[in-house]
Length: 284
Length: 269
Image (cartoon, rainbow over the protein chains, first blue to last red):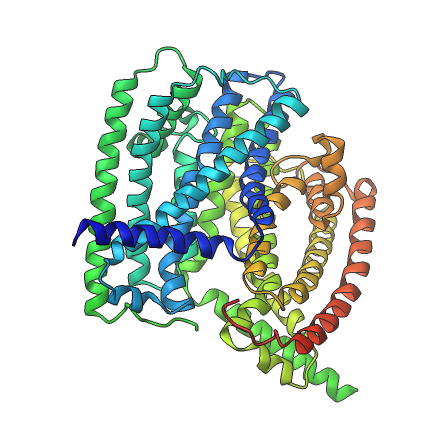
């Protein structure tokens, strides 16, 4: 397929995703919507941390920063998984346009990529708003100490970790799209399964060392572990952290995720066409 | 009058049956509804463990996690139900039938309570066994009273929301979505709400789940009795007395508004 066709498909899909996501509300309501859920999630964990530390009698600002950064950047996982998981269901059963998209000169996978990239953009907006309001509430209003030097962020490492991490999450999203093409009515639970597993085992809000050994083995196999470690080091600069090794593990696990995600999607797409599932109707 | 009552009771049973049958027909849904809440609540229990908080805080999370199931059910299978019905074309069938809309909602609520109670008990047992949560239950009847009052108040709130969501399209979807995490936060699903800042407690007092959850935790985990939690009981009764008539009024009002504006049969909004 010509590069210009691919780029046009991706661009139009991003634009379509943006319009679908935003045209039900005015920009202010939309911004509030994209702020409130992740911010509430951050406040839940923040209050658990503060209350737990209060009854235990010790407060560790380094752990708080660990939790703050981990929970905030987890927004990418939630948004991308949600965008990509419900995409097939929405386009096939709800709006009934998947078959039309399938017939166009652009490929379905580039269309999905475009819609997913819109999810990345939305997640970035959510992240920036959540970090800003999270800092305002915890640091300014509640006076919580946080050992973060916002002027000393290692931006190249942050950008590199984000870039590789996005590949990984998009690949996992393609896997969910593949499963959704083959199945029906599991789109929401799939998102929750993947997000929940990554949240529990990915070292998002607590140190993975507290998990049982089998849990730590899962942690070590997940790309999000290395993604969040890279992000945290770029922002918090913890001593004794081996950046190169972490990046190597992040790349290796991401390659694994890409092979798995695109492989599942390719097989599912082929089988869906063979079995006539591209225009399957569910409850509509 | 008697005939009308019998007809509406049949409606309640019919809607309950559909809800129970539909909610349990697919094993993967059942498994998902047990496993998925466990993932998040396990993360919060581990966070408390990392902070060396006392074990009863793990218990607070487990009890909160079981009540999440009810709140999700109220939001997605009660409040947003008329939105789904509109999308599938069933809403107009309900509206032309000679039955009470409240009977349909009551059937949905009872079916939802049956389904969700089964899942909530499983989450409670699994959570308690996995994390060895210490229970100090002295008055089981008080715990049951608190539980039922909480559930009735929650589903009454769901009935009120159902009328609001009946007219809307994607706004209903997004509103239901928006009412998840903020309610988890304000109702103190994962921590005792009395340790939050005053402003947050003020907002929390507008949600019946806050009082119900607080009462249930105090009875089950802290071993308190009816003499200690009578205020929670009284507040929940007040919530029920306000929300149920309000739901009926709102349902009639929104239905009439929907008819005037021709929005009851709109799809793909």
